Every structure is written in structure tokens, then in C-alpha cells.
Length: 395
Image: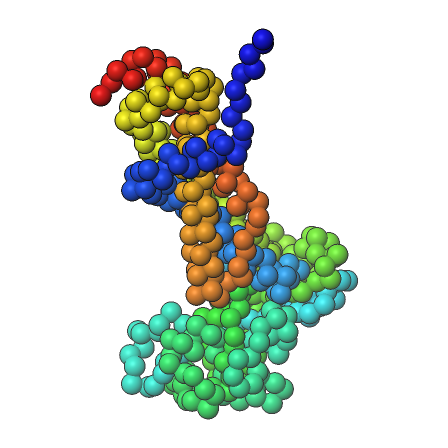
């Protein structure tokens, strides 16, 4: 009669492998912990990075990528150039321009009271602003009101979000000391991610700056909002329109590029952290391999008994490889859950959108299976090579 070789069904292999792990719970948990730390690091890093990137994309969608700024560059003599006082009106004549606003720097400083020394400015500047600035920048007035046709001619002032925080002004109506006279705060702006200089400024009307602050009327920065399909065209015409005689002295930029650069920097930082997670995963794999090798040495008698009862070398290899895969999978599942918890907690505490993609968990689980296979391959082969007679004679 022809002998039929015994087969180890997948269900039996899982049961035998799980039994081998249950006999050493402490060692199994410590080995799985190494895998869990590596997987949790990778999942958390990717999750937090994706949450930050999603927040940046939401900002870009909300603020738009069609904002351009023009500022004076360097003149041929090496000095700082000056934009013409007609630059704002000329910019508005470019086809495809939706809104235009301008700010102009002054030499005045702002203080909470007249008792503060002149040298202590707090890094804040007083800036002249045109009425369309909030609409062009898509900045909201958090409290109070914005400058209008009436208040733009009187000592009224609107604070950027950072300026209000540094001055300790929470509500409109507070007096502030500017250029040896009192100004009244009539409003506080919300955050302006595309114009951080505005956040650190105290804004007054164009006429007010001329009358009280010796402002010369030349804009320092022009903000222009284009039709989305005309951004490139407007960008190419902006410098020549603002200063036809010296277009090379006008610097044109796109503030949304800064957010794109931040996203790229976050991606580079993410790659570095992923490398650390991979190292942690590698250390966990070494721990699994060490656990399985020791398990082979401790269970030589069991291996010999199974071989003497008819188990083939393939059965023994399958048993120990299954144990290694189960051990790694245990650590991978625990690490994935831990990484997800860390990501959700971080996103909620920072006010970021939670961005957890299934591809991250699929990749993490595939990494654990790969580590388990590599880590368990040598111990499984070594266990299969144990001679039954030698194993049974070992006490």
C-alpha cells in the first residue's frame, strides 16, 4: 500500500502555534512589545503628519492659492526701492484682478500706555492700511469693526491678532499710545496665515497715517486676489504694471507657496521619524528572533517527541514559523491600535482633522508579517533539523 504523507492543515497549524505561545506568556508579551512600539511609532508618525497636512490643505482651500503680493526690491544703487503711490490703483486695472489692498509701513511705535519707554516696542509696528485689506486677505474681524470711510481719517486703530495679544488688549475701546497721542482700538483681527506681518501690526487708515504719523503714502506691500485661472498671467504683469520704469525693483511672491513649503518640510520630517520607527521595528524583529531561537533550545524534547510520533520536518518548520507570525501579528495589532489612539489624541488636542488612512494600517500589518517571517525563518529551520533521537535523549 502506498503511504500518504501527513498534512498539517492551516487551522491545526494556528492551534499548535497558539499553544506554543500560551505556554510562555511573559516572554511573548515582552517580545510583542518591541513590535508594537515600532508599529505604533510608524502609525502615529504617519497619522500625525497626515493630520497636519490635511490642516494645511484646509487652510489653502479656505484662503485660496490666488493671492499675490508685491513689495519693493533692491534698486540698482543697492538701496531699498520704493513703490509708486499709484501702485494700488494700477494693480486694480489688470484684467483678472478681483481685489486689491495695500499696507504701508510707518516709523511710529505702539505701546499700551505712555509710561512705557520708547525703546520697548514689543516687535510691533504701526501700518497704514486700505479699506479692502480684510476682504483681500480673507481675514475676519474677531472683535469690533474694521476701518471704514469715517474712522480711516481719525485716531482709530485695528490690531492684528498677535499685536492684540502682546499688548494685552482683548476688547475694542481700549486706548493705546501711538506717536505721542492716544488712539482708540476699534477692532481686533483674526489670524492671517498668508500675511503674518499683518498679525503683528497695528493698522490705521491711510489718511490717518498721513496726518498723524508722517506717512509718505507709498505702499510697502500690495495684496492682490486674482481669478483662479488668471494667477499666472497676473503674476507676469504685476511688476510691470506697478512700476513700468523699473519692474525689476518690484518683488512678486505667492504667499500660499509658504504653506506648500511647510507641507514639504513636514514630509521630510516625517521620513526621518519613519526611519526611527523602522529601526524600532527592526529591534522588535530581533527580539522575536531571539525569543524563537531560545524557544527551540528549550523545546528540543518536545520537537523530538513530535518527530518520533510522525511529524515531518515541514510540520516542525510550519509550527515555529506560525508561532513567529502570530507573535509579530499580536505586536502589530497592538501597535496599530496604540498608534491610532496617539494620532486621534494629538489631533483632537491641537484642533486638527483626524486623518487615518487604511493604507497605513495595511502597510503596518504587512510589515509585521514580513518581520515575523524573517525573524522566524532561521529558528524554524533550526528546529526542523533537530534529530529525534538526540532530542529525546536530552534531559
